[in-house]
Amino acid sequence: MKEYDLYIVPTPIGNLGDISLRAIDVLKAVDLIACEDMRVTQKLLNHFDIKTKCISYHKFNEKERIDKFKELLKSGKKIALVSDAGTPLFCDPGSILVEELRKENFSITALAGANAVATFLSQNARETEDFYFAGFLPKSQNQIENLLKKYKDTNIVFYESPNRLLETIKIIKNTRSNPRVSIGRELTKIFEEVISDSADNILKHFETNPLKGEIVGMIYAQNAKHDISDFDEKIEKLKKKKFGAKEISIILSELYDISKNEVYKRVLDI
Image (cartoon, rainbow, N blue to C red):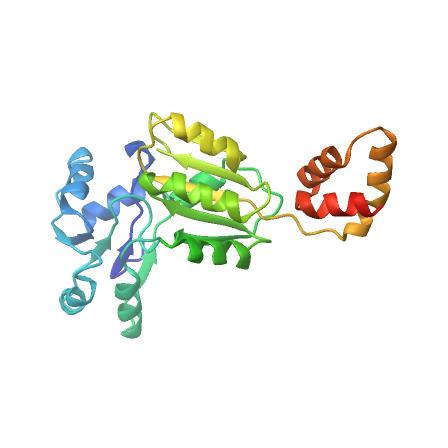
């Protein structure tokens, strides 16, 4: 099998049984493992009886480690890059290292394996395959609102911390009309939970259920806006069925993701 200078190795996001046989072989064979938190990685290595030496590599020392890694690789050593959980370079360190090593033609390969985004999306039915991965959402309300508006026609996948999730859902709820959201937490672990519902219902659920663990979420694409004139016939039919203006606006806004006020005005004009 071909050998590489740097191996990007995914590690389990919860269930240790999700590590691949190849990942174990590589971690045993390389000369050094670069990891975010040596304490976290050591637990994994101990579980699989891997004796390879570790070195810290995190967002605060990414640049200063580059020269050391280059020196080791030039001497013929092999290095594996891991994050605390999941696949490196997905909201985890590694981009700077990969970029610098490619400039000097070091060989790099990535192993297939655990990833929270893929694990989460495989449990959520979607009309289309396209999505925008936002990583961790911005901290300010204004930035989140701008993101929701910019990608209104695309599913938005994101990471979020437990202590910020409720406020984030409130922002989504107030920015979009009848938004649908999916939230996954503790993926592959004992208390795994994936809920797909309206932002209102998800907010109620997590207000009464303690939030713990890593969280992945998706804001479903906002339905394309329909020309309000297309609703004239529907409005007439509902009127004949003795529905009032308020009831009609609620029904059509729910079905077509149009503002209730917009539909209500149209009802009064007809």
